[in-house]
Amino acid sequence: MAFYKLSIIFTNVVIASFLLLGLLKFSMVESKRNVTDRSKISYPAINCRKHTAFLTDYGGKGDGRTSNTAVFQAAVKDLSQFAYLGGAQLIVPPGKWLTGSFNLTSHFTLFIQHGATILASKDEKEYPLVKPLPSYGQGRDAPGARFSSLIGGSHLTDVVITGDNGTIDGQGKSWWTKYRQKKLVNTRPYLIELMYSKQIQISNLTMINSPSWFVHPVYSSDIIMQDLTIRAPIDSPNTDGIDPDSCRNVKIQDVFIVSGDDCIAVKSGWDQYGIRFGLPTQHMIIRRLTCISPDSAVIALGSEMSGGIKNIRAEDITAINSQSAIRIKTAPGRGGYVRDIFVNRMNLQTMKYVFWTTGSYGQHPVSGYDPHALPKVERINYKNVVAKDVKMAGNMGGIDGDPFTGFCLSNITIGLSARPKRLQWNCTNIYGVSSNVTPQPCDILKDKGSIECKYPLSPILIDKVKLKTCSFTSRKKVLSTFV
Ligand SMILES: *[C@@H]1O[C@H](CO)[C@@H](O)[C@H](O)[C@H]1NC(C)=O
Ligand SMILES: *[C@@H]1O[C@H](CO)[C@@H](O)[C@H](O)[C@H]1NC(C)=O
Ligand SMILES: *[C@@H]1O[C@H](CO)[C@@H](O)[C@H](O)[C@H]1NC(C)=O
Ligand SMILES: *[C@@H]1O[C@H](CO)[C@@H](O)[C@H](O)[C@H]1NC(C)=O
Ligand SMILES: *[C@@H]1O[C@H](CO)[C@@H](O)[C@H](O)[C@H]1NC(C)=O
Ligand SMILES: *[C@@H]1O[C@H](CO)[C@@H](O)[C@H](O)[C@H]1NC(C)=O
Picture 1 (tube, helix red, strand yellow):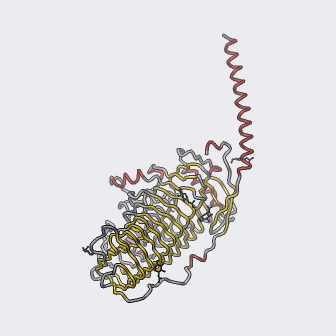
Picture 2 (picture 1 turned 90 degrees about the vertical axis):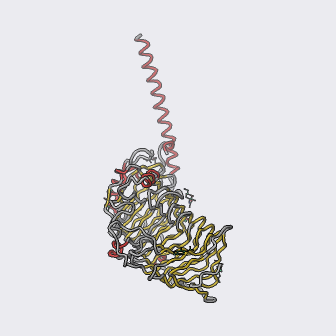
Picture 3 (picture 1 turned 60 degrees about the horizontal axis):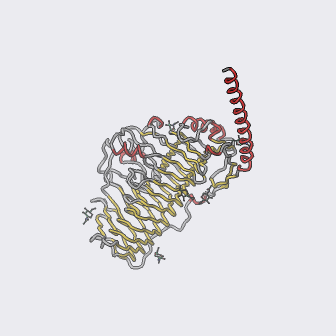
């Protein structure tokens, strides 16, 4: 008996030693690979950072199950000490990093590596409630508070969220279900919301399945958003791609968006709250956007536009299977204005409408609104548009006693679908001119012979920002099987 036990112990010791040896050998091999696998990653950014840290330095676990909320918060807090010492970059390495809401800091870069996914927690408690935005007066989904966005920040300067096509997954499905079942008393989180901030870059990322809007810069300026892939199911509620809201000097370029709502929605606050706050969205360019949005607009102006929207350029816009191209949405009560909008070169395939303006959009805060606060819509220019498979060319309505004026449409060729609407243009309470538009527009958009609608030739300020080439050395995990 005793001998038997001893022999078991002996056998175990032998096995254990072999295992230990094996492990040692294994990790030696791996750490050699480790050395050779280190690689330098370069990326374009508005500013480079002196200090580099990895999420794993703060105990992050990329297993897709462990919550890293406290880890992200601790990392950002710690790295904020470098803000005035050359700034810091936090690298999110390959893995699935589950987290709730966390805020960023100034002079800071969040870099999400290829193969890394920031996975949004589905737990409401991971998104502390915050006050409604002052220009909205209440949450957009419900009169209550708002769940903080997954990635947030307020009063920041010089913040970059980028990667080499790393992913942010909002896991929105449970939020969409709760929203549809009217089970939410607070407004759903956005994926990224930066407020009262300046010098912002969001680039080279894939974002999927936001609970609601994806990217929401608000009360901010000097913003570059580029090289983004944004995708949500085409029937998901309110999954707008990018919503610049009361922002100035904005560039959105080279983005591909599939959305259940507007691909881009330019906003500036809601009814009496937005009027009082009075901060417009202005000096903005959207270029090389590709959009799929069967139930909404490629670019919407509004419906929340009470602080005003002006001086917006859009060029080289491609849409496939979308409801309308550039849509102006407003209503009595909104106040504010939409003016000096310039659109050049759109290529549209399979659309319900090419042109759509709505003066009776509705949706007001529960606290009521002033029906005499009428929006002013003027100087809206579109040129060089080719559209195919279109149901109705233009559905253009203004407001009784408050017509939308100064529309200009030139060089526009609209091919109709197999079963188009009988009425191709419906224009009420709008005025303007047209030139070289087929099918021939309504009489109030008088054909002026050969004119060309305006598109500014002057450079736009945000294009003057040159990106630098920044870098860091990536790390591979010791046991690559955990990746
Ligand atoms: C993020 O910042 C906002 C605005 O300052 C604040 O209300 C919120 O509590 C912060 N969230 C976290 C998780 O620290
Ligand atoms: C970001 O995207 C741009 C344009 O596609 C590309 O030139 C650049 O290499 C990308 N950077 C990274 C780090 O992937
Ligand atoms: C980024 O990844 C998405 C899929 O996640 C892919 O569709 C897209 O083409 C990639 N973008 C680039 C620039 O590689
Ligand atoms: C009209 O638009 C088409 C398509 O965008 C373009 O190829 C053509 O050059 C434009 N014509 C003029 C006169 O600008
Ligand atoms: C045309 O538009 C007006 C105002 O938007 C609407 O009331 C009317 O029903 C429309 N007419 C047709 C025939 O669709
Ligand atoms: C291998 O990677 C680990 C973790 O990324 C790191 O701590 C270690 O120093 C690396 N080994 C070598 C020899 O570089």
